Image (cartoon, rainbow, N blue to C red; front, side, top):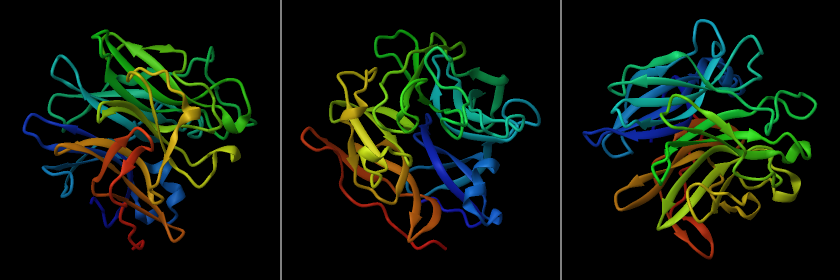
Length: 316
């Protein structure tokens, strides 16, 4: 478990180095803010290392808001991958002061050692394309959703794919959530593509991830803004597809019963897979700490099944 006495921690993602150390990257903000709702506008990307995904050693932050520009307010959720050149690529979400944090864009920082990160140029690499995606419209939604990049190699060797939390530019306001899509030949130059899912009653599909669990390609996502016909009691969802490229029938997604867990990632753990996410609200209070691994398996009848419950500590 990763808990910081002076900071809340929430969305996280993971990478493993050549020494088999795990690196956790996560959003963090000071508990001195008192109100956890304020954390989003003060978020930076923290960094910790572990040999077992359970005991963590804090190291220097990976990335903070820029002094000026499109990401000078906060840096949000992303992913970290290793390129064919051996370098590490950290894709992240940024928001800026000029738009009061309402417009999300995707940026890139690079590293040779997973420790020291530098923005690629000014960082910005992917913006929403109105051909398919909703731009900022306060009458439809409270922000422009274009965040949480998840990058993975094309299984046939044709470059890279990026999944994105996005919203379609049509349909009911509370049901436009889709899996946005972009492609790249080299991790640096990206082209926005049509979404990989259709609107299916979700306001947004947060922190998407694909993984092959027990031989089955799965899309994992979460949401705290669900249309009434989907049932607001569920936060975590998974859906299968023939390949990791989808397309994803989000209307067929099955819920995952983890009421205190949010923004989890599927992480290889021993001979299987585990979920690691943050403990959200317990007894009405925000906790803000990262869970221990929760073993999971895939069952064709019931979907992704967790084998233990996430711990639910009292907020301290």
